[in-house]
Image (cartoon, rainbow, N blue to C red; front, top):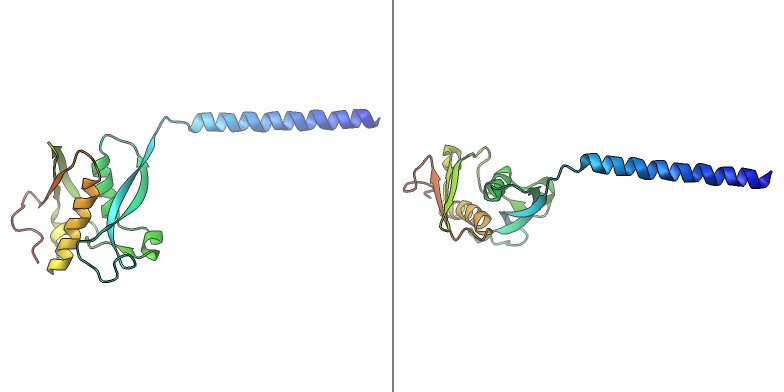
Length: 164
């Protein structure tokens, strides 16, 4: 009697293990969409890493994003989203206005030309803040090997933008 009870338990446990393994395999197979994620960096100012605030000194924060053919634009979007609560708790902050939109981004022979809407320059005063904004954008784009130089514009204008 004890042997058959023990044998029944072994069979029941074995069946349960097989069911759990099979269910896990099915769930993993269904969630495998073939999407690949990569880490990019958005650059922000940081009170802890630069307590004297050197204006153009920015520091990277990693973000895991879906790998696309437009990683540079994705990195800029992450920058414009600003620091997360966790980043803020670590001293990161942005000098860029909230609500800024990218009108266009093109990269030709190492030169990234990024055009933003008017929110980028809205009530931006002071040479330090202007330098901080430029540094955040420039360093976020220059992390990519195909970007050597960055030209920033607002609604197509490059001359009279981000003035202190």
